[in-house]
Length: 91
Image 1: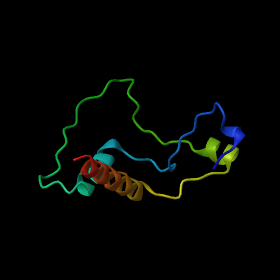
Image 2 (image 1 turned 120 degrees about the vertical axis):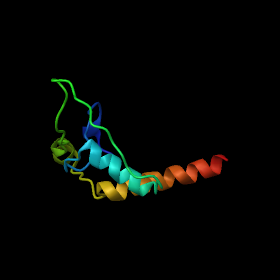
Image 3 (image 1 turned 60 degrees about the horizontal axis):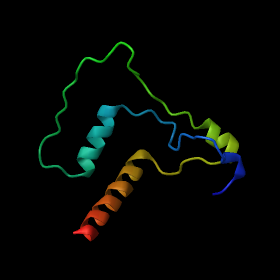
Image 4 (image 1 turned 135 degrees about the vertical axis):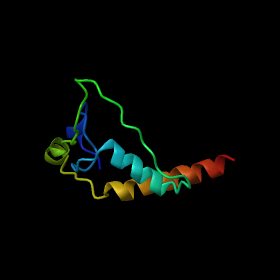
């Protein structure tokens, strides 16, 4: 999609669905089919850390009329499949 309305603009290209980093890590671990059990260690954050992030995609939708059609799980699967194929072709 091309639109002059997007020139010199920045957009959150994602779904507006909130995702915690720990959940993202678990999804990737599962997709990458790791044999080891998933483990994560929580560490105390800084008082000014962002606690929750929900991308606001309204600017992209309103200005360009575009919304994501691929959910996070599908997108992660597509990206990891692409990376695997690319790495195989380089070897």
